[in-house]
Image (cartoon, rainbow, N blue to C red; front, side, top):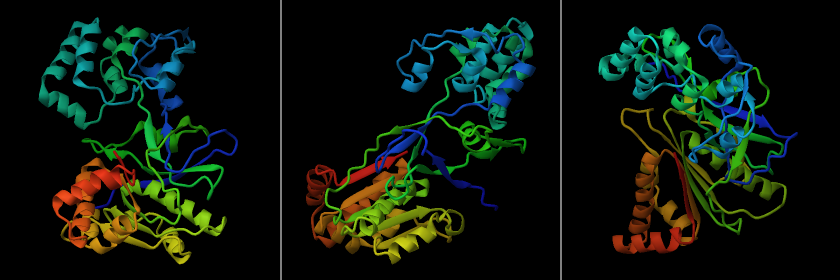
Length: 379
């Protein structure tokens, strides 16, 4: 089977803008629909709306990101609303078909829309094709013509911001923000290759600028750079860990500071396709900044091997750097792995430290967590 997961390293040039960030922070991306896609929508489907009509819209909901809420405070052309605010190329839920049927002035189309909403087979068929709001409107032109701008604002959700961990240290590589991003492209049930809105915005837009802000991270770092750091990153969760190692590289090589041991447990599906930044890990180890990288390539053998399995194979290492030497532990990756990773840390301390389960639980809650030496960012 061909391996289809596509991960890209994306660099944003921030040298000409004021966008300071700290170690462990993330970038909030505010995706926009491509202008050419929006123009095509107006040309082919929304001929009854004036794309250049300047309007004022009041946002009544508090459950809206601040950036989008502030966008509603200014008068803007209708086209801008469809470009920057509405997820018009996203996948509609059943409720949209019901709402469009209610709004429609055409009895025949209204019945078809209601049938789709109420029939599992028909709805799932369109879901398999990954049809968008825009495509549904094109399928039912008379109903589309019944839609006012207010109807669109009521029935189509807003574009959701995307959060990406920053993959570099601002000291090690100033003037840029580096991201590790999964390219969201998939083949629908008709064999058509489709691309997600954020992926289009980041890599397929003719624009040379993107709309972002900095989101504060939750990671807590030791005051003493000699403190050991044990890190586990799964997939693109390796991004902030790369930044952590870069930061200590800068402090060691440029500032002349002593830095402590750094252990990385790196989990991904395949070594060939997903072992990212392999040359950098080698350079960091040769420089004496990175102590060890332990890989878990889950799909490269007959049985699954995950990060928690590799952690279980190295209990002495975990005990030494986390418990004995008072190091910090960091995890970034899918939330489904959090319990198993936590269990691996506890089991290492219990077996090597010859502690009871109750003693380990007390240590975990009253020591490593209470002292903020255990940080996780899961998605």
